[in-house]
Length: 103
Image (cartoon, rainbow, N blue to C red; front, top):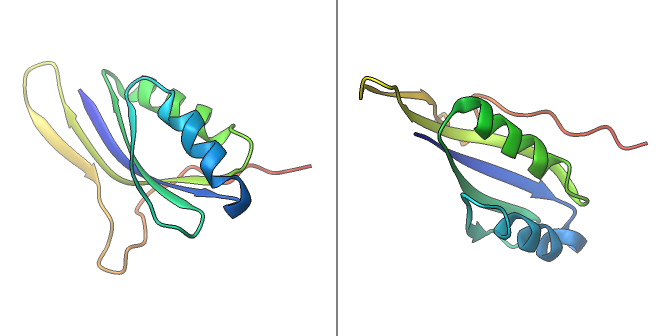
């Protein structure tokens, strides 16, 4: 099981539409709309690869500027657990998916 907290930065004029698209995705939940074009979401998937696919799908939604991973928790097949990413004290993310290049 993989669980990641992500910050989705959107065009503020498209935040509601982005939120609806994200809410329609299986295993993804919007936890907060910060009111400034940013959404806090949690992604839950069986594998890290599946999780990465979802992040790429979110990043491809019209109006999304960036998807930044703030936290990642996983359980391996033997039942062990680990934490791979977490925000630093200033709220900056340790890892992120770069913003799309708009042409």
